[in-house]
Image (cartoon, rainbow, N blue to C red):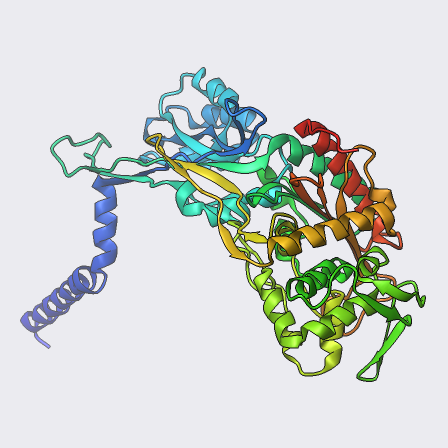
Length: 564
C-alpha cells in the first residue's frame, strides 16, 4: 500500500472521528451540555417565603400567642476559590458546627468552585461565631424554619412542616390542611455572572417578589387546651390506658375550644417518633363503636318523631331475643316497668332497642346521618374519618337493635361531640370551627363565620333530651359526675372493642367515653372524654372523672353564676 493512500486513509478516519464526536456532543447530548454551559454563567436562587404563624385564642382579645411560628436560622455556604487556607478553615468550622473536618475540607479544596453548601439551620449564636472569624469566602443566607414554642402541646392539631430540596411542605393537622395558605409564594431569582462569579448588570435578570404566608387565628383557647391536655395525660397514665382523647366545644356556635390526644409528639422533632400513628389526631381520625353514649341519640329520634315521651313506659325483662341473638342489659338485671328517663339513667340496652324499634331502620339511619354520622364533619384538619353506618343498610333486625346502643356502627369523637352539641343547643348541628380568622400579609382579615349544617331536632326535643341527661347525672348511675354548684348533663359509654384485623370483640378490652355539658341553662360547653383500653371496668371511673375535672375548671374559668 503506497504512502499517499495511507495518509488519505488516516485523515479520513480522523475526520470521521471528529465529525462523530461533534455530532455526539452537539446533537445527541446537546441538552446536557447546554445545561452545563448555562450553569457556568447562570445563577438561580430561591428565597423562601415566611410561613404564616398560627395563634391560639386568649382570654383577652388584645393578646395573641403563637403556637406555631417561623424562626430565623442561617445556611452557611462557601466560595472555595476564595478560601486561602482550606485546612485551617475546615478545622475552625468543624469545632463550631460539630461537623467532620474531612467532609468540610473536601468541599473547600476545590480551587475553581464558586459555591459549596456547608450546613443549614445554623443558630444565630453559631453564625455569629463564624462571622467573628472574618474568613474570606464564607457567606450566609437567612432561612425560615418552623418552630413550635410549646413543644408537644396541640401537636396533633398543628401537624408539622417537613423540608426537601429547600421546599417546605405541611403535613397533618392545620399545617397540612392549610399548607397553601400558610406557605405563601417563594421568590425565584435568576441572573447572569461573569467568569469571576460577579453579577453582570447588563445580563438577563428575573427577580420575583416573595409573598409571605397568611396567619391563622384559632378558636382553640390556650388556657383550656393546656389544662385539658395535662389532665388527659394524667388520666392515661393513672388508668393504664393505651391512649386518650378529649374535646371541648362551644355548642352555641360550634367553636372547638380544645382537642387533645395522648400519646402525643413534639413537632419540632417529628422525625424522632417511633410510631408514625402518633401523627394522627385520634379525635377526628379514629372511628370506634361508641356504646351507650349513642343511647341519647336514639332517644332523641323517638322524642322528635313523637313516638315516645320522657314518661313513656315499657317493661324491662332484662334481655331480648333478636334474630337468634340474646341482648342483655349491662347489669344483667330485669328492672320491670321503666320510663324513658329511666332508660338513660340506668343505661338499659333493652330500652334503647324499644325506642329504635318504634323509629324503624330507615328513619333511624336517616336521623343518624342528619346528626352527622358516616360523613366528615368538615373540620379544617387533615386526616378526618367518616365512621361507618353500613350495618344499618342490612335487613336483619339485629343490626338496628345493636345500633340503638352504639354497637355495630362506628363514629369519631368529633362526630359524637358535635351531635351532643345539637342535643343541647336547640337542635342545630354546627360544622366544627377551629379557624376563627385568616390574616393576610397585607393585614386584611378574613373572618370564618360559624356554620349551621342543619336543624336536626326541634327545640322541644332538645329541651327534653337535655333534661333527661341532667337526670342521668342527678339521679342515675353517674352521680360521681355531679357538680356541687351547677347542674350538668351527660352519659357514659363502656363499649367492647375490637383489634384491627380481628373478627369479634377482644375480651377485657373496652373504649370508655363520657360526653357531658354544662351548665344546664344555656350550656357553655360540651365535653367528650375517651380512654382506649383503660385498666378499669367502667367509664364512670375513668372518662367520667376527667369530665368532672375539666367541667369544674371551665366553670371557674368562665366565672359562671352557680345554679345550686
